[in-house]
Amino acid sequence: MWATPIKHRILILGASGFIGNALYKELCPYYNTYGTYKTANTSYASNQHFYQYDVETDDVFEILNQVKPTFIISALRGNFHAQILAHTHLIQYVQANGCKLLFLSSANVFYSYSKYPSYETDKTFSQSIYGHFKIKIENMLLRLPKHQAIIVRLPMVFGQMSPRLQAIKTLLKDKEPIEVFPNLILNIGIDTKLTQQIHFIINQNKTGIFHLGSTDLVHHDAFIKDILQKLAQPKALIKNVFTTNNDRYLAVLPKYNLLPTHLQFESNDFLTKIEV
Image (tube, rainbow, N blue to C red; front, top):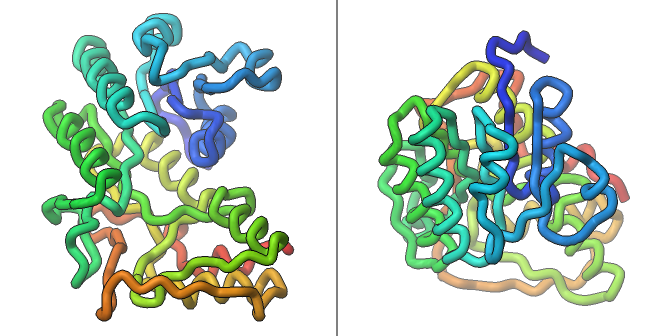
């Protein structure tokens, strides 16, 4: 893809999850890449580049001291309090060893702003528990030297094997209604593009805050209905959920940290690749 200027040792925390595993597959041919998984799984246990790690019970320092990463990607999920403690330890390690930390954050850090899309330098504010949790970890990273921290804010991420698409297929199979939010305006992420974008950020030694989503905005209900059309299920049961009478934005768009054109995409780029 690109010439590699720095031969990083990359540790992906949460490498068995949807996004974490996609990142591992993207990065391992180019870097010395390691990952963590939570539950017992022979496919990971037999891979010497994977370490079993439960954020609620295990000490992340044990893995850090074994791997000695120069670049850490946090794609962790799970208990919020345990994650905050783990990130406190990660930041201590980064400060002591001069490496970098990339944190996968969320559009939900702007949950309480609803009238406009959000950009990299906008002030974060969220009354949702999830958004508030992400803000807390973002603020921890922002206290690091700028050259050591990368915050990647993501909208809803889709992919052929994404939990969101699989959930839709399960509801279709069970003939259950699919919830849509007619007044919600958002952009989306695509796993294959996201991994390429993060690869570029690592390769080009970039730091700062990045908004990695589609360049276009869509209504949630219209986008889900387009997915159903692609799945040949245009008459599927739909449940409209109205949280407000007005249009509400939950979109993260880039203004300052723009990536090259070949790494930008639109929501239709996902729709065209959906497989029934």
